[in-house]
Image (cartoon, rainbow, N blue to C red):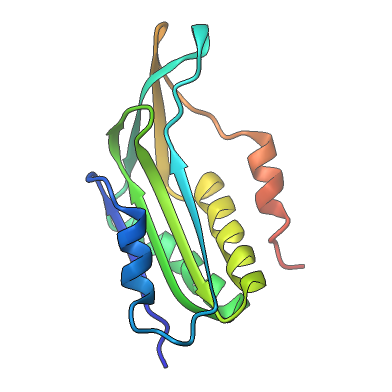
Length: 155
């Protein structure tokens, strides 16, 4: 059986429950579904974010995410996978990203979801600009995110 994989980059919001239902409808081979939802945070005080603007390189971003989805499928016995990443202007409280992994057992689903989120956070071709009280600034990569992603490197 071919594993169903959905990868979408979109400006529009998504419904997590609908995405889980679409992935698991009529399936009896799924024993675990793990989801990660990334939501725009606002913060407080001088560091408060009023919005994020996410940019990507169309075509390249989908291909790169697809490449890492294939790696996840090769590393873990997944029975389904959905990755949705929004772009454009996103305000606090709104969805940014969704990763849904399905497997017969929870361990594979959890590990694959973590692997994919570490990749999306550090290596996916997105550029993030924050808006706040002091203006706008591009967000640099964080060393703790790179360290998290490094654990998945094959030696």
